[in-house]
Structures are given as structure tokens and as C-alpha cells.
Length: 279
Image (cartoon, rainbow, N blue to C red):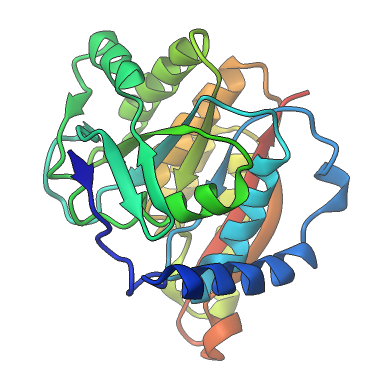
């Protein structure tokens, strides 16, 4: 079975030529902001990458995926993202064999899916959660464009994004990483529809907790400051996974917001690329 594109022609171009041209334009912009001091990183656990329409968050996503391309090849890219539609299982692994984008098909790592299913009963095979969900789909063309090797994906949509679920997920990913080399992409946007100054302030506090690998503080800031980060569960799971691998910090690669594109500063959505290099 193949999962067909659900948001091609909407979140990103549906034609190969247009998509490649857009990637060239986004890459040119990303190259001007990519942190040179991280280009020598030898390994990492993964990245946080946004999932809005490419014209809004594409530069930040480019920065995140360019960082992944600097790392040693991974057998599997684990995609963690929120379930925006609210249907399906609470921790839903894609059940198909391939995901399709305008750039071709990418195999789903069925072996790793089976491993997670045996690790905890909270995991379930459920394609309904993925059928129209965009948060993971929009990452796949970036991976196809930037990674210079063949890879599999393991898409996991999170309806439950609480701390307890994320702790188990992070521990499960660590157990999986002892069997094969994986990289994790936690798909999330940050503040939604806030004035620019408010969004920057709130997002800065959240990103500080993310970079400190402070899961408890991350959830506390989200709650106390009412920050509308839409993919907290995947981010928290990545923090847990990174700490178990010996990671000491995360590094903000790039931050921007939708107002930089639209010119509308009274209601913006924040986007960040955050990397998790290993010492």
C-alpha cells in the first residue's frame, strides 16, 4: 500500500519542476543564515523542523534539513508530528509500505514499526491518523531533496502529546537506536497568531527550555505562558531521546515567523530550526 500526497499543491508545489525550483530558492536563502560553527558537527540525534506552507516556513525547514545532510547516513528517519485532525490512535505509526511525494516514493521502515509495537502497547498501526495529516508529509520532500543517500521513514502521529507519552516515546526511540542508526525529526510550529513581539518573547522562553533539554520546564512554560506550540509531544520525545544518548544541549539554528513573508506583524506564526548535536 502507498500513502499518496495529501497536501501537495497546497502546502508545497505538486509538480516536480516547481518543487525543485522552490527548493533552490529556499536553499539560497537558508545558506545565508546557516550557522557555520555547526557545519563541523559529527553526529546528532535530530532536529525540530516546522510544518507550515513552504513559502512561510520553508527557509527554517531548509536549515534543519541541511543540518541533517551534514551527518553520517541514517537507516531510518523517524518523523514525529502532531495529529491536527484529532482522529485515529493516540500514538499512530503509519501502516503502509511507502509514502509518495512529487519526488517519488520513500519506504516505511516496517521492521522498526514492529519493534515499537512490541516495546509498548501505546503504539498502534493506524493509517487513519496519517491520511490527511500534513505535519509529517511536508518533511518528506525536504529529506528527499537534501539527504544524499537512500533512507526509510517511520512516521508517528501523536494525538496524545502529554509528558508521560513523550517520555515513553523517547525511551522507545533510544531502544530502537541501539538496533539501527536513526535520526529524529520533530515537526512543530511555535506561537500561533500572536503579535510579533509577543510571539518572539514566548517562543524565546520555550526554545531556551528546549535547548536546555528541560522537559519539565518546557511543559511548564507552555502551560504558564499559554504558548501555542502545536507539536510539543514530538519535541519532548526528542529531548528525552537526546539526553539518553548523552546529549548536553540543543542549538537554535534559525528562528523566523510568518510576518517576515506576509508583512503582517499583528498576527504571526513562529518557526524554528533546532538541532541536537552530540558531544
